[in-house]
Length: 173
Image (cartoon, rainbow, N blue to C red; front, side, top):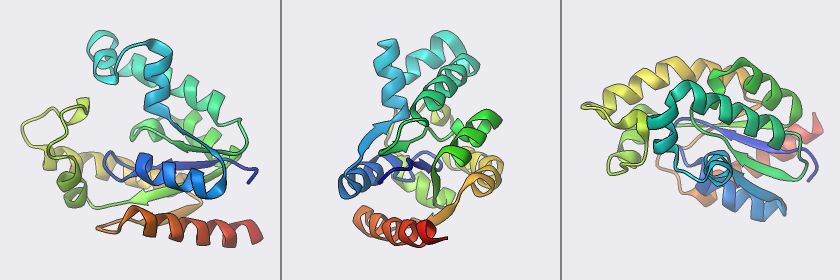
């Protein structure tokens, strides 16, 4: 495989699910950045947010992305907000192939509406929050991505097939 593949997108886009399958298909190691942060700190992401705040979480996230983005034969599912830091965008863009799993806020709402583990979605109006995050982050995902894959209601295996095809074309350019 060689170059790492980085999956970016808002929470609920399927980065971890797609990433696990894609890594198997590419015979690469899969890492979920959020799980790596939890493993390194020994606490959950919501706990880090609660105790240290979002800024310190983002600092930890940048350290993990810097380290992992230098590894070959890796599929990395980034956290939804990893794209906010310019150094993360630069590292991802320059060190591997960035795939933006794009989904509408409405699709993301359906996928995350019962999930209580996402700190940024612990609000009264989840859909409004997802629309706000989409508006803020979509341009950054698009700016950073080498490939954009619309996920919608598509099954994960179909998304993986699309990514594999796009990676083959991308490798030839």
